[in-house]
Image 1 (tube, rainbow, N blue to C red):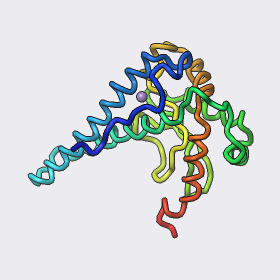
Image 2 (image 1 turned 90 degrees about the horizontal axis):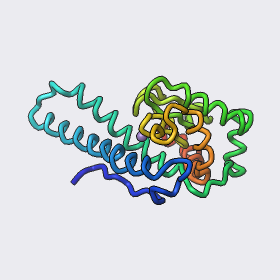
Image 3 (image 1 turned 90 degrees about the vertical axis):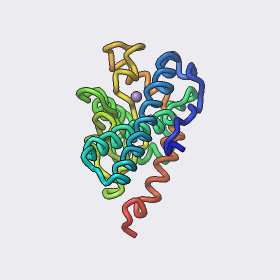
Image 4 (image 1 turned 45 degrees about the vertical axis):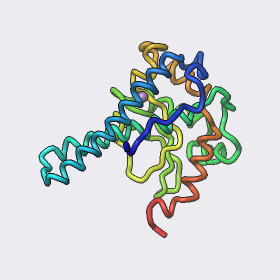
Length: 208
Ligand code: MN
């Protein structure tokens, strides 16, 4: 039995139109995300074979494969739930207050997150994360599926900036894709993730 499985989307492939087309959603979920799931399972299997044969000549490759594919699986699993055809447009009171505290205002946060996402050189993600050490919200740039973020931070809101996420709809005009993203954020989902991360900061770090 595979360890990782492709989750169902909580909405139809066409639900996010016109902001993200059904064609992109279908390819992105059924091909790209599915490939990360298969890759993560394959890496685990090959690690098991390496242990069984006590032969670790490929371990560096396998560790990189696991980080990349499991990263891709986790990133997309969060991303799908961060989106909704029924976005409220703004966070609710509690999350909005935290965003004001750590970024100054919602508009300042949006500008920061957008700039970080648009500034990624190559493939990656813009992420709003909870940092349990500083007990604060931060914006991070994730490179590829697995690099340039701090261990232990908890992703709350992720934006896929890989070309496969937008190119069919927006070609090279990434700013229009990011602008469309803000119209379909599921702020209830982000708020739920925020509350869970904040309330479990100590246990996340085994500090208690
Ligand atoms: Mn993607």
